[in-house]
Image (cartoon, rainbow, N blue to C red):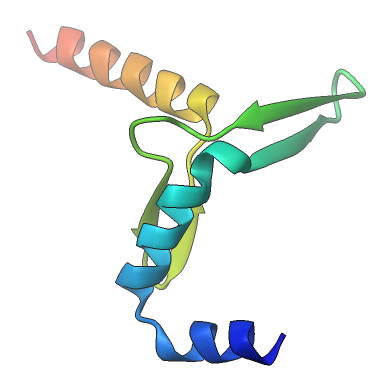
Length: 80
């Protein structure tokens, strides 16, 4: 475990981001829907699984990216 701690302490955020992107296919996120009283397990986006959000790592699910794409289309449609 000391090797892992050393790795974490010695790598930059860009290197950590690269590592998370390589592991994205092995990461899933469980989300509890309070209104439906159910759990949904989501995989990370294939195209942009993670980004830096300030000093944090933002994990992007496929559903989130689909939502953002739809929002972008709505805004684009409103402008034209």
